Length: 283
Image 1 (cartoon, rainbow, N blue to C red):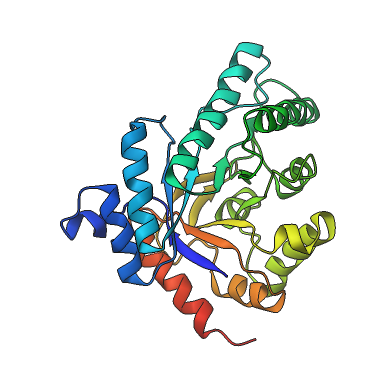
Image 2 (cartoon, rainbow, N blue to C red; image 1 turned 90 degrees about the vertical axis):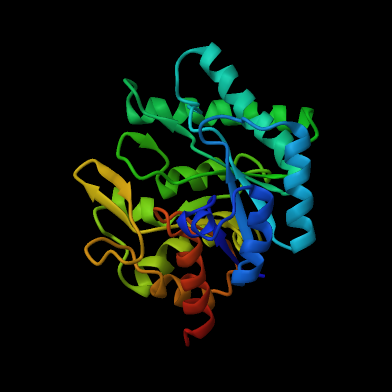
């Protein structure tokens, strides 16, 4: 079943007088939302007991939890020491995800750095094969590890690169950030067919069953010549992308992803708006 929810707690959560992430469970439920993404972007800074408490609150509310691994991950760094840290960031995120009771981890694959594009992608792929082995060794193969499409030209994470990474093993699930794709490609997502062609490519390469419930990030994003600049809200009228054409494409292809709003401060409201659009759109 398709799910909609916010990435973290936005302005409305705090303006309504809430303080603790446990309260975000009922906050989301009362808005009619289905999921919530907890960000470890700046590192994992909570205790195991706190993670268990958060997981219990979300289980009670019937709101599904995912996590975003730390932003420090870079599987194209030529340093083996750096690679070991990146493995650790993903695996530690998996440990806390299990404490939450969730099953999806989103992570940024890599940055190109001083390597050629081909070298950086090849090194990332090799490191993801090692990560796969660590995943199985640690008993995390029941979780989904989601490499994300990235918004800046210098980052590894085009749609094609992410799809190829997911061919390494079934533990990898694509995390498609349509705002990132639109920013990276200078405003490429406008029509239903713009979305549909990319979704059909994913299905052709990975199979319908692996794509049906894929992970989605969505927000409007300001961009320039090098790609992503900053996240915006749905109130912005200058930059895209718009959600309705994606909603139509998802319905036409019978896809039911886990959709996370990454709007700047209005992520809960914009998640509600996406759910409204999806519910009401005709195909």
